Amino acid sequence: MARIAYDDQTAAAYKAVREVPRDGLEEWREAVRRHLSPSPGMTVVDIGAGTGAFATAFSDWFGLDIFAVEPSAAMRAQIARRPGIQVLEGDAGALPLPDGSADGAWMSLMIHHIPDMEAAAREIRRVLRPGAPVLIRQGYPDRPYTTRTFPWEFFPETVRTTDTFPSLEQTCRAFATAGFRRDALEPVPETLMSLAEFLAQVDVLRRSATIMRGLTEEEFLRGKEQLRRAAQDAEQTSATKPRANWLDLLVLR
Ligand SMILES: C[S@@+](CC[C@H](N)C(=O)[O-])C[C@H]1O[C@@H](n2cnc3c(N)ncnc32)[C@H](O)[C@@H]1O
Image 1 (cartoon, rainbow, N blue to C red):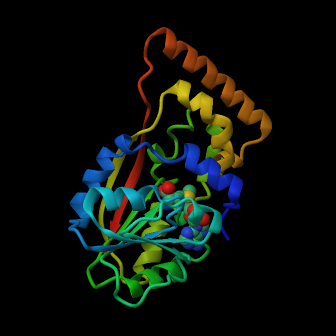
Image 2: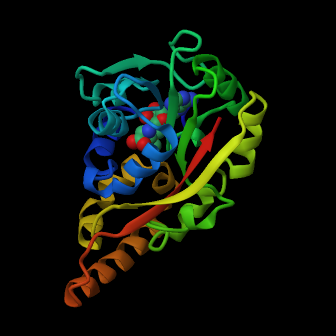
């Protein structure tokens, strides 16, 4: 069970406001290139693929063949159907793939939904070819700049939820039980949106983001008001450029 229901409404909201604009993902493109060494025709399983933002990016950037595995029918329905992307029902603990069939696994903002990370790690070990990497894009409570960042600066109570996410240490320990070792860890920036855009989208964002769902009405309205003032100030000082956000790329092999 995921922490929130990824139903039709959430899936539509996710598609509308949660996908990072492609030109904000340049640093991710280079980080993935460094650690995956992609070449056309390589096969990558995108676990918890959501609306397919990274499945399509990996396909466009590197010409990879992607298995987009996603448990929610509503999220799967949002994934673009096109050559090079196979959309499959499944989850991290039950991947619908043969043994040794993938050259890499990608897990973006989803490990906090996995009920049994050791079982998932064993399942991922099964489907990966020997030496193939697992790439995880995530914020961890023991890496505060990844969880105390945008939108935390306006909604500090989001830490109530992010503090319950698996830590980096717990994640490495769970994957170690399936024979994976930490190969690399690097903070990667991404460019999101301006404060004015954030303000325009924040109600929809609240519906689609696990960390925003946990806010009380009062916390949300207080944060929204601070955001409104910050967006106004930015307008006056012409500081309207998109905000950056940092997450970690953890690579296990
Ligand atoms: C925050 S979304 C991230 C989607 C996508 N990876 C991205 O970065 O845009 C989390 C996704 O994980 C999926 N999910 C939840 N539990 C899962 C599990 N046990 N195994 C695989 N995916 C899961 C949800 O259905 C949802 O689509």
